[in-house]
Image 1 (cartoon, protein in one colour):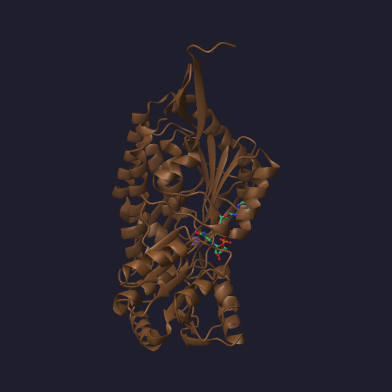
Image 2 (image 1 turned 30 degrees about the vertical axis):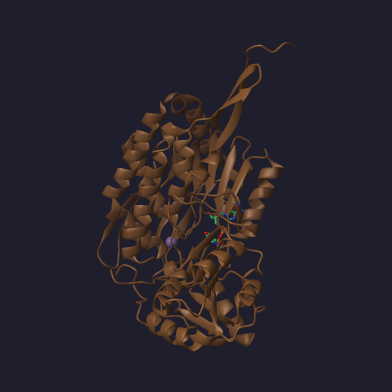
Length: 493
Ligand code: NAD
Ligand code: MN
């Protein structure tokens, strides 16, 4: 029986949580503990358990027993009902979950309430609807009846990041459970708390023990053990491209488990001179500064057509200056702290590098406040396409603004990257919007908007931004294996 967290936020909200490794519907102790930090202050919130290899074994065994036992035997409509129930409980606990998410991650409380917590519930419901609609095809074959079955894969591992702890949990649980798999999720060591609250709700919803197991711990220990586990049939990872490579390697060195990856990006946001400029400014702002720039699909390279550059920059600065940076527990805060000291140091390092390489820091560029990991929204101009800040993913509130002459000019720059997660184009010319969207190399192209993520449209990367698609019907493909059954009618041997 592991410990309980009792913590009062800076606004007086009392956070109460059980900690432990959630295995077989129980919170158990791991072999070690880790501290989780409040990014608004840099101070410790609490200790959580850290799983080692043996703990991962226990979680996988629980998931395997549930897969071969109660989960396999349960009707798909009952499975759906459990998922709907969990979604309802998440909505009921919106405030508690939001407070925990904001405390541990630093995102504005209004975003936690209206986006993150709602997204996990809505995603679970969307996939719950599929649970009793998973079926194969009948294929006419001469002298035989052939049909396919879409069967679950088995124990699915998931390794999730810290930028959207609850939403990422939903993206992994939804399709895995709907298709009849069981799961072991490892949360990020930066943000372990909100998923622990969900564990309490998993018990209340009535899931059989072992169907959903959630472990806290370090990537290199618990994450690696999960990626290498012989009894994990599939692994879904979201995080850095570097660790994504490691996951594929671990899969290939163990049991060739199926791998889906959702990795980094350096997404171009292209604004033509005929665009509605005020709207483009707002969307471009959301594109880079939403979630403090900690989005894999962030529009971190803005390309504005030459003739509107000055006007764009003036309006962009004005709009950015009036969004509130500060305590994430305040209702009106747009931007809170970055998630950790490590991320803070990386981002400040990129800002220094940008200045050193000769870019102009048009606004921001500094730490904000004297505690926590706050960074001013930062805009660089006079950039060259080979500068580090244009090439590498910064994952913070830092954007570069380049100019272009025409479509060919901007596409050359936009496509000069190994990534391909997202892109956007702003124009009133429909034909041009379609032409540019077709020519961009990205898993999502937004036209006249940015960072609009819907649970029912596929999301994933071209090139080194990933493998596979999450969300929408497409996500189901990652969690089923197709079996052909062939029944002889009139064939002779
Ligand atoms: P990360 O890739 O190290 O962490 C993501 C998850 O992977 C965490 O749960 C972590 O514990 C786990 N992990 C780490 N090493 C592992 C290993 N060897 N084996 C198995 N699992 C492992 O990301 P980070 O260090 O937290 O952030 C670094 C950079 O990654 C960011 O600056 C950003 O560029 C990128 N990132 C991308 C996303 C995304 O949504 N695509 C999310 C977070 C971070
Ligand atoms: Mn934290």
